[in-house]
Image (tube, rainbow, N blue to C red; front, side, top):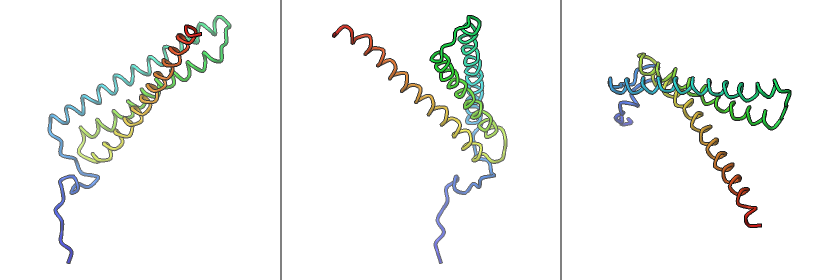
Length: 145
């Protein structure tokens, strides 16, 4: 007969049971969700505002630049996505902290949305550093010629 091995608290929980958080843990998670929503909404407002303020004067003046439109779509599209990812993370994390069911599922859903947020942020940082390096190179190149 196989010997039963002891299970940890986490292994003993099934997917529908509550993860035993302390009151302080629940407050910290709830605080995180508040900031996710605030920053997410601000990102969305900035994305829509800057796209409008960049493109509207061009449209009114009858100027069309494919490059400018492409840059605006990429820049503000990324900001919009970042905001949406944060809002997607806030909802399941809040449910995890405030309900008594499916904590593991809510934790996974919130973490996956935060992972998307941080992945996109990382890509944007790498692109920013690359563009700064190209700009610096372009500025310094004429001095050596």
